[in-house]
Structures are given as C-alpha cells and as structure tokens.
Length: 167
Image 1 (cartoon, rainbow, N blue to C red):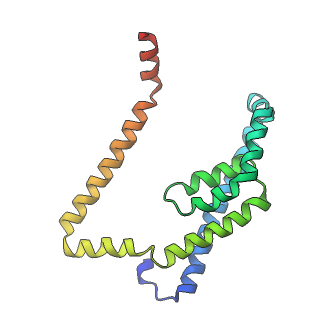
Image 2 (image 1 turned 90 degrees about the vertical axis):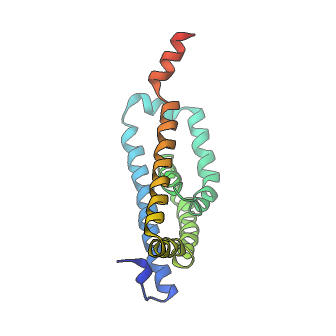
Image 3 (image 1 turned 120 degrees about the vertical axis):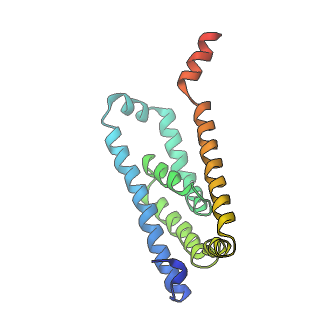
C-alpha cells in the first residue's frame, strides 16, 4: 500500500505512523535488552559490565539518554542505533518509554504531514524526466557505496597491522 495514496485524515495517518514507530523502535529496544541478557553469560563480558567505569557509563546513559532517544527520531539513520544502545545499556523503562512516546510522536507528525513530500517529489521528477531521476538515484547509491567502502578501508585491521609493522 502506497502511503501517498492514503485517503485517511491526517489524524488517522498519524496514528498509523505512530503505531509503526512504536513497534519498530520499541522492538529494537527490546532486542537490545535481550542481547544484553545473552551477552552477560560470557564471564569476560560480565566482568567488564560489572566494573565501575562501565556502571558509571550506564548510569550516565540512563540519566541523560532520554533526550537523545527522543531527538534521534528527528534524524535519518540514527534511530535504530540509539534505541538499540538504550536497550543494551539497560536504560530503565520509566525513562525510555516517555522518550519513545515524545520522539515517536514527532516522527509520526513529520511523516504523516510533510514527510511524504519527498516521495511525491521523486515521483513527479520521475514522471517529468525518468532518465535523469534514475541516473541521479544511481549516482547517489554509488556515492554511498563509495563512502562505506572508504570508511571500511580506514578501519581495516589488515591495513592497521601492515602500517604498524612498517613502523
């Protein structure tokens, strides 16, 4: 179902989008909680997570993480990581859920109103100039792939060990 074709009132569209983000972001948070529980079974990880520095970091994230969670919904590509991190660090539900509701509400508002204008713009551009639109889309995908490859090469352990042994 194409959201551009929805004939629902804005309030209904907002409720649908809000439900989607609550399920997606809340599910990611829960996955983080489950991962946290599973990874603590390793003795070495448990020792690290029980240490004072890690505990202090967790307390800081728990205390100040709610605004970060709420604001992450205004970004593209950061929401999943922030919600997963909130789960894996054990952010308390009483802090996470209000942040999820506030951030999810803003996300739903944006995507149920002006957020779909981007889809409309691409659709109209394709109708006017399909070749140009596809070409620009491919250039964008190639640029992203190049960026990811470049970032991966910077972190490549083989390259680091080669440069370390040269020194």
